[in-house]
Image 1 (tube, rainbow, N blue to C red):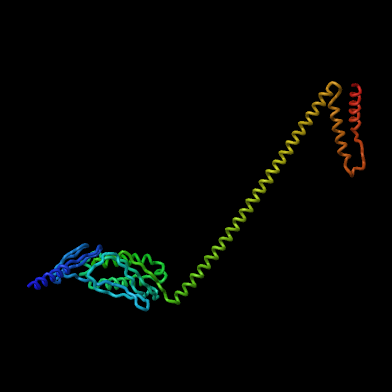
Image 2: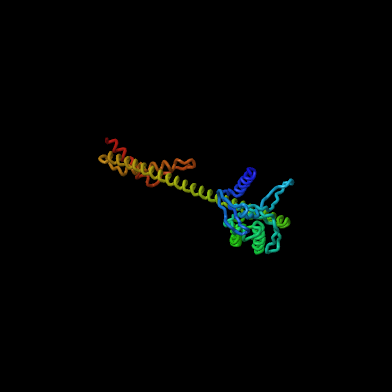
Length: 323
């Protein structure tokens, strides 16, 4: 009898242990009772009746590496629904552009489950449904663009793809946060042509840049020479002005000195004779000296008017003799 109760007690302990479910933060568990939705377990300790209730599993995409070093993806059934953001790295797929060029694209999809109940009951295989929807939508978008537009419109494709996927997956309780196109691989021959075109374009830009640099250098050199010429002319002009001012000041000083000398002579001779005749005679003699001082002057002559000057000189002599 004691053994019976011991077995019952042990079975009860096992039953209670099986009924206790501890849910982690950012996780939820869908519980079914007799095959129908019963409740959703939140984070923390929860209790269910194992014979009546059972968790409803959901398929999850997982990755693993083989011995060859390559990464493979598969799906497995789990009873915990992860509410955190999940990233799907889709394998490369061939897409045909509007101008009939076959390119290879692989994409990253970031999404998270918002409503656990919809994610379990609204779609049979959530990872595969999201992957196939992404691939078909991507084909449709790229098929509306030519190759050049596809290569330069990654941001546009990302935005449009995210909007379409977010709207389509809303009924599955999923929110698509963003989509990123990792790589776009055009065919090898087109890639080679594009490389040549890019090289030619770079060389063209380099030539233009070099020509613009030479042009700018020539302009700056000409402007420098022009500025130097202007400054040199201004300097010469200023020097000429200063020289002329110096000559003028020298003449003024010389004239003032001569004026002072004449005034003193006039004052000295005012009461002894005629100073004007004296001054005329002195100037006449200075002029005659300047005329006859040249090396090529061979003939010395006396002008007709010299007799008047000599009489003035004689008068000066008499005036000093009187003194």
